[in-house]
Image (cartoon, rainbow, N blue to C red; front, side, top):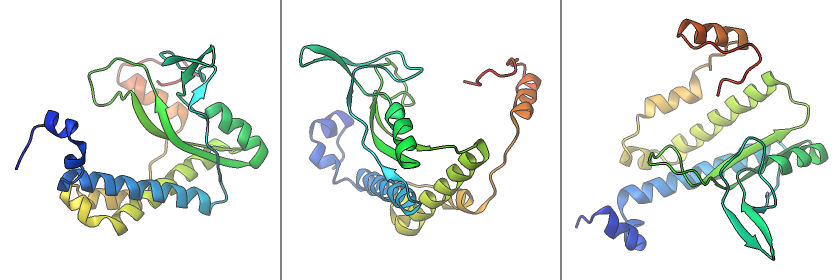
Length: 196
């Protein structure tokens, strides 16, 4: 019997039994397993950053604040500062955990809470970062395809597109080429500025 979203949110135990929600959670679990196996298999140390933090990470604005033993604390927006320190101690580290953003939004692209992966490697240059990101994506998608094909079919995912993430080369362009492409599209970005 079909029920509306409001009913299912109030009765979460029933929603979790639905075919689609069950598939989503099994794929998510496989992704988490693949993330951990990828980084652990490459000698990374998994560090857990604190959920409560006394300050904001770089570049953040809207924080969830709460009183914490008589002082103001914030729900973490990033483990970046801890991972940078960890990378200097261990060489290669990562954290994977909840992140909170106090941003009002009515879109599904701006979540208040989500899980974020943050790897840090001491002294790794940009080409190495890109190589690591590509290898990670190939590994994760490959594991999901190998172990959760039935769930992907329930979710009506295009398996050939996912397979191309594993098989096809990833295009790369230089910063200068990116600036030229943006300029051709009418967006002038001064040299040295971030694109975001």
